[in-house]
Structures are given as structure tokens and as C-alpha cells.
Length: 411
Image (cartoon, helix red, strand yellow):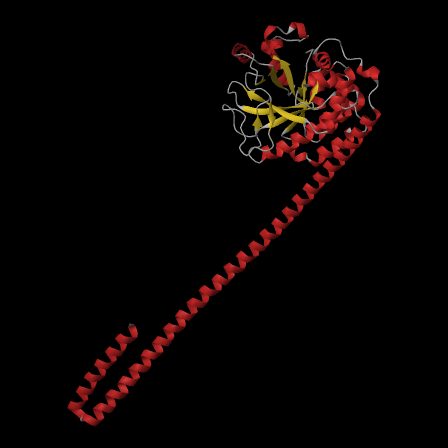
């Protein structure tokens, strides 16, 4: 547009100059002068246009250089990210491989130990030590033969008729889901559920509790991996029996397996009965310390006496203590507690222990527990144990709790 205006200006200027020259010099010289003037203006116009084009090209070239540099920076950043991603993938692959290898080693040892115990059998004298009363005796009575119960337990383990049940543990007073306790149930050939109180003594006498515990452990790890994909705010209490704690052959491999799964240290809590801890001995306490060193918290349940060395418990790695709600409500003196129920929570807090009231079954008990500042509670009031369902696509525990893990109601 500028060049057109210059041409028009030059044309009219030359025309005016030519007309003026006609008056003084005549037509021939006027035409020549006008032509020379027009050509001169054209040269000036062309020079100005070239200068403008050079500036434009220079700006475009500078912009192109900036774009090239930005592209090079982005390319370098992309390469760095790809390199970091490759490193992360390699690390995760190696970690996953270590976990798989550790799990295979544990499974191999577990199955080898299981096969050996099945082939050796349990001495009849051991099986015959089952009490004449209680849940185990009642279940034995349904068979008519005590050895038949042991064979049913062995068959359930061999054919993987072992179910994982989870029961919620909630915070008070909000009743928000904070933990699950993992429980194992066996099923006989007819589908009848065998409760821990019915099989634990017999399985323990036969040396099979390590098999039960470690099947439970593998299921807990699998559930936690699914759970952690949704939230890392909910943990699982995994019960370990006294027999497994004292198993010098298996427990080191169990520790290796948990070493490979240390990323779950903040999510899995290993629970031991008070009797198992008190009878653990130096080797058992060493095993507890190894778990604590890896970062796994410990919990004590089946508490019969509260005359405990809480400083020692904390040093061993215990962070949770489960006490029956009835013990808290009906009086602590009978359990050997050094303080009243309303001061018990403060005593535990000073030693870094969380108090969990278990077997809570009615609202009246909850009100009393709140008076004692109890932080966590477990019981049928908040949810019964339910079996984990492996084929569920939409996990639901119950309407009052967050949908986090698939369940089916126990039969």
C-alpha cells in the first residue's frame, strides 16, 4: 500500500514538473526531465521497499531463531522426562520383580512345609488334647471323630478353601472407617464355615497355623494393593499366631517377603495375641523387633490382663492395644489395670499406644466409651466381618462406610 502511494505521488509530482517545464523549455526537454524525475522517484521507492523487506526478513529470522531455541529447550526437557520415566519404570519393574521372587520363595517354602506336615500327620495324642467343651469340641462333635476334624482342616488348606474376611474399625465419635481387621475362615467340603475358635487349636497342635497365617497374609497384601489404588488412609490389621511367630524355619522367609513389601509398612499392622507376646521368648521378640525395624506397626489383642509394661511394649514396636469394651465399661480392677477407665487412654497415649475398644455391640456402650475418650472401636455395631469377593467390580462394605473393597455378605 505504501509503495502504491509513493508511485502515485511520484506520478503526480512528475506530471506537475513536466507541465511546469513545458512553459519554460518546451515539450522535449520537459518530457525528458519528467521521465528522469519519475525514474529517480522509482529508485528511491524501490530502495525503501528493499530496506523494509530486509527489516521484515530480519524480524522473521529472529522470531524463527527464538522458536528454534524454544523447540530445542522443549526437546531437551522431553528427553529428560523420558529418561526419568525410563529410570522410574526400571525401578518399579525391579521392585515388582523382587516382590514376586520373594513371594514365590515364601510360597515354595510354605507349600513344601505344608506337604511335609500333611505326609507326617499329627500325633493322635496331640489331637486328643482338644477340650471336652467349647467351640472346637462342638465342631468335633458334629463329625463324631476328632481326627476327622484335623483331616477336614488339612483338606480345606490343600484345596484352598480359605476365605478372607474383613471387619471395620472406626474412629470415635465420627464413626469413620479407619482400619479393617483381617480374619480367616475355612470351609469344609460341604461349604460349612469353620471359625478360628473351632480350628485354631487343632491346626496349631498339628503345626498348620503357619499355613493359615501366611495364606491370610498373602490375601491381605493383595487387598491392600487394591485398596491403596483408591486411598492410603485405610490400613489392615493382619493376625499372626503364636505358632507362626515361633516358627524358626518359616519366619525368616516371612520377613524377607515383608522386606520386599516395605511400601505397605504404613498400611499393614501385624496383630498378636497377648499370650503369644508374653510367651514369645528371645527369638520371638527378635522377630517382632525385625518387623518394627522395617516400619510395620504391631498390635496386641486377646488382652486378659492390663498389668503390662507399656514402655517395653512401645520399645518392641507396639502401637495399638485392643481391649474388650466390657472390660472398659464394667471396671478395670478385675483386669489388673493400674488406673481407672477414664484415665486409661491418657496412660496409653503417654507411651505412644492407640486404644481400640473391641466387641462393641450397642449404642449404650459407645456413649460410655466416649466418656473414656476412646479413639477407635470395633464390633458388630459398626459392621460384621464380611468375606472379600474377588470378582466384584464395585466395592461396597455397607452404606455407612466408604466403598473401598469388594465384599459379599458371609453366609
